[in-house]
Image (cartoon, rainbow, N blue to C red; front, side, top):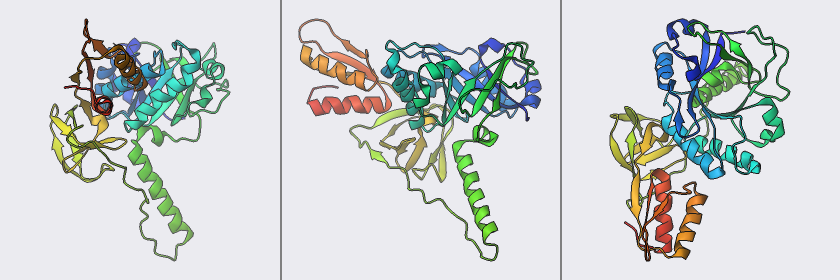
Length: 364
């Protein structure tokens, strides 16, 4: 058994990471409890991990009540996540959905939204919850399951999860140097190696390529094998043009890259820089001459005001907004044939503008 894998939240209080680092392979830090409650210690824990070279990921305790709400929670999660986190996790432990049948599509929407932002995303859910609600139908990059015994001495026991999973949380009563409270401890439980969790996705991909190259050389030692490069097409770039360009703000000092695959860094933008983007891939924004990673920037919100909306137009608009996860975002002025305002950012703003254009409705 290697060092410890711990998940932590504000319940652990002050942590002395100078002591904890000797025992840790990985920390998974809670960022939020639903959308509205940010973990009060997560930035402190991130700083501690960075200062002492401890790899870390993030998890969000989910509280969404619908598919649309799940998308909102996921976006809030990504906006708060530190850019150096190795992965994100959706922690689904309670039935908070208005319609329990929506638990699968809502959880999938949360995960897919994070993956579209360029993240590796796992699912954490209870042992009984997994069975009761058919969580095996959810597709994630890895599965994390808790299963305890009553009298645990802080080491892995024989009562493993019934289902195949990649991480097993075996106790909530573990000990970690530098922490005064009990902690949740975990171990690898599947085919994924520790490197999968402590390295960014691009680092893992490079390791796989190196292994393939070495294997080819072993099988044909007499033949000079040229380095193998992955035959990977560049990500598709969707243009927004000047009309639908949106603004974003750098969360920290960020790189600008020549390639849509985030290769060839050629300059740095300072933290807080606001700039326009004119296209996008699944994980990057297109800027003049290059690309920036979506996870490194925060979309700037813009308020749009429409012309007068009759009841039919209003109903049509609200239906569309619900479909894209902006349910309840429309603010209608009172009286007569009222105008309305809606505040949106990023691709949501693009979608709203295109909808209004397609309808031929006035807005500014």
